[in-house]
Image (tube, rainbow, N blue to C red; front, side, top):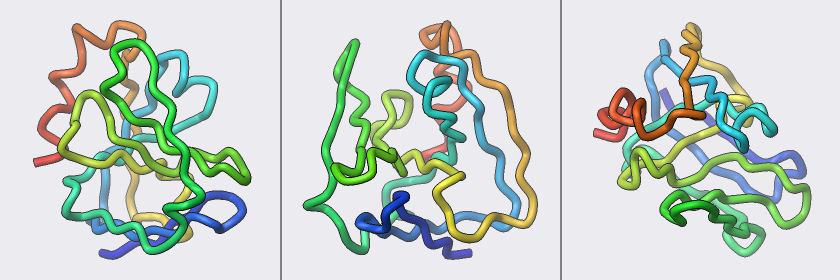
Amino acid sequence: MIYQGSCHCGAIQFEVEAPESVEVENCNCSICAMTGFLHLIVPARHFRLLSGEESLTTYTFNTGVARHKFCKICGVKPFYIPRSNPDGVDINLRCLSTQPKQVKVIDFDGQNWEQNAHTVAHKSQ
């Protein structure tokens, strides 16, 4: 399935290829808990930015590996390059205009990231 997504104001438009039934992570780390991000991690080849590259800004913290992409206009983070899967793209499921038919939400202990990152490392393959 090809899903369309965007930031809140629509300046950033993208599409992502993912199954009709997906498993997403609900992370309790500081940034995810504050933003309500639901993680749909896909291989980079399954993501395409359609428009809005000039409206993106990047935020990094801690190790600087994860590249959090935010809209400069509305402030929404529709996707980012995760530290756990630097060869993939992590889509905020809540930013998709249509939702997969089935969504299984798994709690992910991002407060203890180092001990748990291996459980999602396969998702960008």
